[in-house]
Length: 148
Figure 1 (spheres, helix red, strand yellow):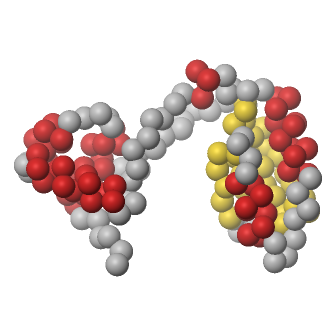
Figure 2 (cartoon, helix red, strand yellow):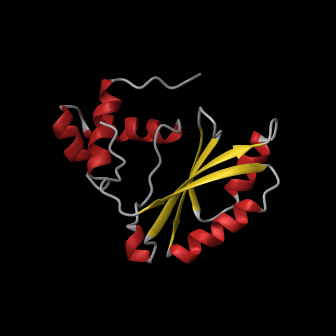
């Protein structure tokens, strides 16, 4: 059975997405419910895979200062194999299937331009990839996890 998110869950998610360290008491006060209600709903959201608790790291602080978006054409009937191969790349932070001439789009985050080249060479070794279009990211002006 799929977990149905209601307005109270959405309210909790909104508070948590703004400040993941906000106390249940503060959230409860803002939503006019008890702290126990927030605690139980929070646990349900975690248990049902609606959210997970992670620390969001500033990549620049770790020396990750370059990135690229790479569009990939894949041989017919090899999409899942290509996706599995991409999942093995530490540098790839995002994989999505898309419409249009390129069936996959990946985003990489690496320390420098030379690392982008190295990843491109590694991707070229995957037999299921027939073509790629690389878009180098020059600067990032917005990167958020705020869905509300």
